[in-house]
Amino acid sequence: MSDRYHGSVPERDNRVPSSPGVDDLTWLAYRAAHALGEAFNKVAREAGLADLRDWLVLALVSGDGTRRTQLEIATQLGIDKSTLVPLLDRLERGGLIVRAVSERDRRVRIPQATPAGVKVVEKVAIARDAAINDRLAAIPPSQRASFHAMLWSIVENAARQS
Image 1: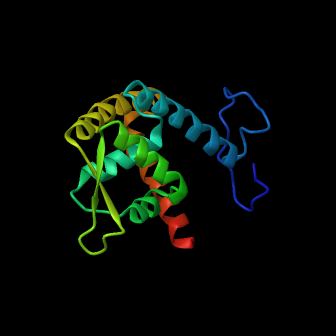
Image 2 (image 1 turned 60 degrees about the horizontal axis):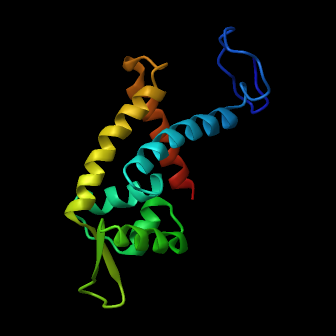
């Protein structure tokens, strides 16, 4: 079956019901991302976070020891800086981060995870892995690394084109 996008679509499994979205890769990607995101948001909320974005920021500022400005965090995670500030305020009120003053520029703040924040990151990472494994149960373990690599290729290609 050829598709309207000048390529070919893999033969569809006849066990999958036909519907307008099944042949549309964009729709499928959106639905898959939504399913994974909802599973992860549930895990994040159960740990006292608002959603996936809270965890992403907290994980980034607790991870590799790199001191990032708020603007660098927003850029790296693709979060609008006007959205990031209230998110950081929420994490700070919850005792999960502190914002240190930059040594290079006193106007700039460097968010850092507190020990409580690091514990939340570790707890959520374990629950996240379980939730993701549950959602990916239909993909054989031998194919998951390839699936992950393909998704990363899409992300990297999009970043190069922006």
